[in-house]
Length: 340
Figure 1 (cartoon, rainbow, N blue to C red):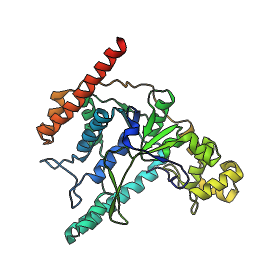
Figure 2: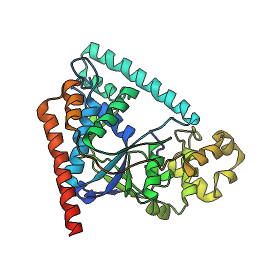
Figure 3: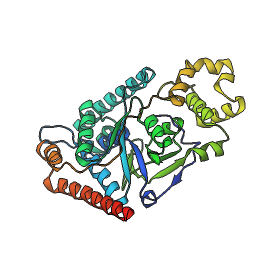
Figure 4: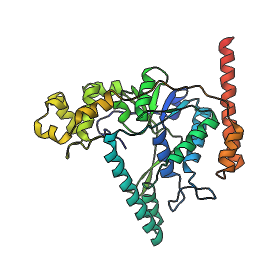
């Protein structure tokens, strides 16, 4: 979920066409959760194969990734989360409890025949299993799309890759990438996507947004370190924050006092070990062990995974293959033109 900085972070709405050719480190787990939440039947059930195994993540990942690469010339590398920091365990437990509650409410709504309510509860009940993550990696391998295993948070790894010039931006719906130092963040990387608002029971159309860290810091009049302190006051995945303090008040406090260290004691005492949370964002665990080159499509492996194992139609898989073949042809033509 990440920290809520929406009320204070300036962002620019763009058309997908404006991102043509951009190199993006995509928060893979974030994307997979989106697919699990929204690719469902009318009563809220996720898509599944004949053996009952969920396939929403595979459908969403394969169709969106190949479309963005083939039709918009984007160069995507998917970054997967590593083991969570111990301080994140409380947040993960809270999310697990929320999913279980949503699952119970979904089943109750189904029994009552209230399909609208069932769908609203189902979107919050998706569970991304280790098996699903491994299937997603296998799918990317078959498509020839690179992926990276982060030692910790994917957003931290993406921000590091951007700092090295290996990608242009980090694609994630969370604001944490800014705290990790990503200079450019792309939110809502979707072609015709929607976000479901359970409280209103409506689907909200999503359009891509671009956030520039330098613009954020300039407009707010703070440093990145102070932005991290603002987030800690509000509450992150690693700490609860101070009750009653939202982004706007947190910003005023940090601008007034300069840092968490200078806050009144009554506020600091509610933050726990905030120094360690700072280090998570300012000195994250990252790796240099990654390759970003696209590879040829493994057609046999792709048909085996999607058709033989998960009942995808051959026509759908053929579309994926043709998209990636087109990308390979364009890359070869570009390389030849540059050589000549």
